Length: 66
Length: 219
Image 1 (cartoon, each protein chain N blue to C red):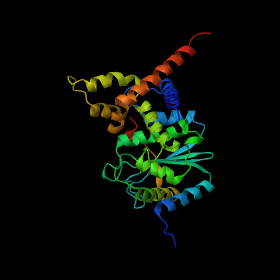
Image 2: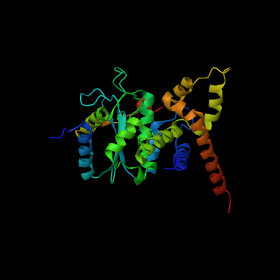
Image 3: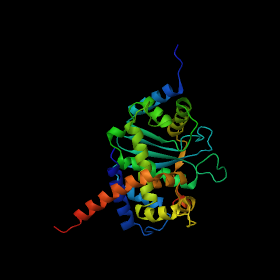
Image 4: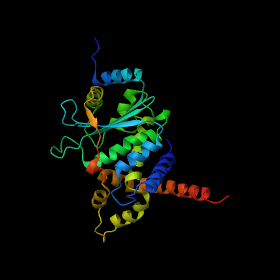
């Protein structure tokens, strides 16, 4: 049996979102030098999970605005 | 993606901002005001969310923000700034930059920039452009989005003079000081002021000025 990697899992999750009308997905990685496709995909999967489960609040900039 | 298109779009947003936002060009520029301007200008409705970096589900070790674009709307996600736990979140300057950087995708991307192959895209994010991992359009759009956000937060008219001051050994002005004044990430400020990027942008702005001058002539 083929091992399900984080990258494959990420690909599957993106395809599920495509079925729901997603046309593009982009992430900002910032200045992280030590990373590999698997660890990045693992975090991307957590990101999508948080997104789907509504683990978010409306963004307020407050002091960050000015 | 053409860099000129990015500069042109940023110039339009800057124009709306200057006309409609009372604060004017005083640094730091208001991200809230830019969000309102982009909401008016963009044809895609969007919502902005903060992901709590303290949540056990997501700790933002690598990914600091993102955009999910659907056929009829978009959702922008930005990591939380956690003053009590700075190592878990992002800085205020990053928050300002990432918000506009993600929003810029609504204005500068076209279908060629959309995510196609997930594997190819992930490899691009990790390894960047290299002879072994050719440029992908969705990856190029990331660099363009960063340039766009910096055009808004650190407008062009300030750059030449501040660049000279920073490079002058007799002037105490530093990149860090300028980054603090404009509330932008230092790495992004240094990036846009490097010779290669600054010279390329100078060329684009010169073209833009010529076009604006031509079209402002009375017929």
